[in-house]
Image (cartoon, rainbow, N blue to C red; front, side):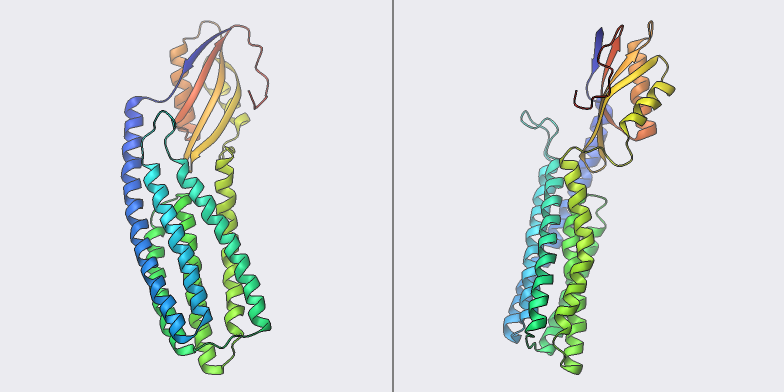
Length: 313
């Protein structure tokens, strides 16, 4: 059995992709940095308002904004790292830094949602008196800040990292809406339990999105098969549509980061088939049919003894 190896992509294609990624990353970095300064600055205002009014709800929300600030800082660092070029120690570069940040942010939001629910239960049993006036003023300011930050992050594309950061800000945005409603109810009726009741509602809304981001980022970190890609389907498609390929096996598909799928596979060629032509056709088919821009293909000839379906080889 002979083998012909091909690694990487055409240099022009790689340079174009890297340039586009670099430009997109720079834009995302600016968005996250602006959102970081806005959120961090208002966190100090909200904390001061909470202490002045004696509102534990505002102090707790300031603590929530502190976690947002940390999440945005983490997201910003991850975006910067992802733009760094590959080196000897990291041949694929730093793209996974964004996925790791997304996982950490999602996990923190799961924990924060659980804490809100527990804390709300305690407050329902022992209501805390809140000054509705100062609470309303600060909550309205917080809503404006969170809307601005969320719009900055929401327009940054499909990055899981930025989705995780945006989820933190969305949680605060919903928290501000809940605080405004609670403050109005408290001012009109004096009904203090409305604050923890609305907090539970916000936590439940956040919980679903937090779980999805944590699950999706963990799937990428575990090198799971990207959604929509089936190794068996890829193998069958190549055999059917690439002339001279009579067997495809050991197909592995995973994601470097969201939207960047990688594939390795073995392709067995019939006698007399030109290897370079078959290789070009395989890569073209992977790109056009499955959107795979980076593939490592091992071409085989003659008798092949390893054409089983073992995914671990």
